[in-house]
Image (cartoon, rainbow, N blue to C red; front, side, top):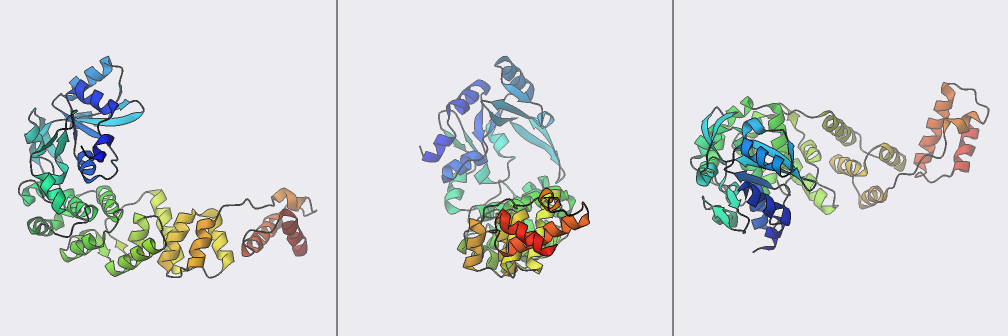
Length: 380
């Protein structure tokens, strides 16, 4: 048994599999076979959601009522969440939503999954069920649809983006031409997906260690243009090289910014928009002196400042080192300190604080309380 399997067969997961007649399914088994960290462990079971709910209730296992209408029960056991999905078969699909029916046939359930590398099952003894030669494809780093690619894509058009994401995730060097051709042929249907689903999947692709080749394939097959107006992959290459050179944490949003993309169908959360605005501002107005650097660092996470610096093409080892070593120090003065000097309570108090703070930034946030107070006095 490979060392990755020990992450799957814990006392808790074995107990749940025996209790619910379940097997671990999908990505967790794939990642264990690849001996990479396993994120989430999901289960499949021939039991219906009602049966799963009943058994868990009798065993005092917390049930989280989400996804039940789609055949999935989420439970919380020993401080961890797990999803248990009833074995299913597709009745109909329109590319966005599928009508399903429950089944007790494991192979039939596997046949409705997208790729061979995502259709593994493992029982509580560690036996792996591989109905579609997924292990062989893992060894080849080949992303291959189960069955006919066009048919699988028509069941859910998000599978086009998932194909390229797994291509990047696997570090693939060989592309399944049949799958690629199907993705290209049906790419216009991406517009039928919600902006949220497109954005989530594309950012997951950009999280991969080296997504450049997948992006190029998406450009060449005219997939990328379905949701981005413009993207310059050469800029992405350069940004990722610097990201690795300076050991800067991977950020899908910074990588997106590096492509100078004009968004067409992507939708971001308020927090993501703020990050993108910060990155754009740093790219357009690069840091030119220490005072600007410390002023930005004071209110911005240093990882974000590092990413913005790389985007601006003004990075140096000294600047990167300064940012990495930065630890926020509280500004020594408050408004009360200025008022104590006899300045009437007015807008002038705030002005003096801001002017002194800029001076403090210019001196690398090193001046003491007494030195800052002296600086205020010089401005009165």
